[in-house]
Length: 267
Image (cartoon, rainbow, N blue to C red; front, side, top):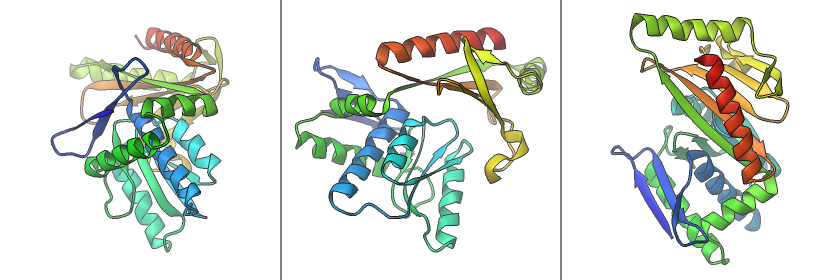
């Protein structure tokens, strides 16, 4: 029913699940997170254990699908900068505030997840347990996790994401990355892939009480977004893309056009 893999230090978990054809389909980090969150909240609701003041924490480059699932169940959603340490810091804030709001789930698109307050970092041991528990719970109800993912798409819209990286080595590379960020910051595009840009989030200003970081996020009129972030550990710039479509074909088309347009502007 499911294949699971972790990295050597076992803090990231990836999973593949059987589809209708009997083959295996790899879930993205965003999809695994959405499935586990959907399972937790559905089960809590069914058992009358849904927190009255619950919270989900995700990073700014993580899909909005999990946020929509959380809000549908009455939970608050908090965004942090990229890196699970920021999710841990937000959890500590909750703890110092007497456990309010109550932390339920935290995750990032890069396959990091945490449920429960026993740790302040992503944990693939817990994630492996949780996604297997979800698979068993839904199988008892006649559904595979692939079925559940399709149900989620039908209910919330077909969310699709992509990450592109461009390596820029040497002194010239660092200068080029800086120039790209400055160009997009000083003269943000009015539209991307033919869709109007409705908002620009410049995290170098310390938005929403978050630490200042050289990250730009562009919000589009159709609910899509693009995020530019120079890597803090490698000579590369990372470009995150997210779209919401009516179905898979629509989402794939929107994503393809958005990626093509942005990469052309960056390169």
